[in-house]
Image (cartoon, rainbow, N blue to C red; front, side, top):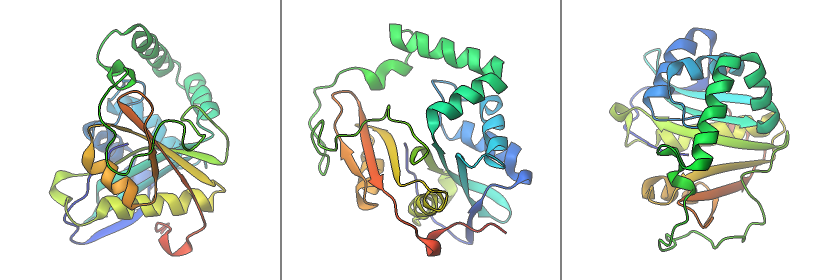
Length: 226
């Protein structure tokens, strides 16, 4: 997960709407979010559409003058969701399968985060195995926060933190009791924000840290629905 924050101005935090879908898909692709190494708007368009009706997909936007300038994106029961997604979108499913196969055999750059690392433990990060949890766990009560990104023109005003709080509140309102994330070990700004937000960030022995946090209902933090 990446966290990028910025000068807010007149920013509204709300859930994705139908009229936001195409622009948000382009914003996500431009923000560097990937699904198994895939990072184009054609991949994210059906995900955004799912966020309109599938309670497992949560898409929270930061909107300025009617234009999305940031997003937080999470999926609960993620293994079942992505299986269904691949069946509904077979062309994308084949691309994801190929990307995962390439990752396992070390083709391309996406495998870098999974390579072993001997880097020093960042400040505030706990050793491997401390939480007793791992990214591979999946259930309707576990949400995977895929990304939190804010447009460069809006960074510096805490929008990333606001998006994250709204994401937590919306997940909890949908019955999710735990959120997980993954962050590259050299992404110092994201690690600092995640620890400040209450995540426990854990070494994994690779270049990707594992983060986890228990969620509670926070009606005041929920994003606008209107």
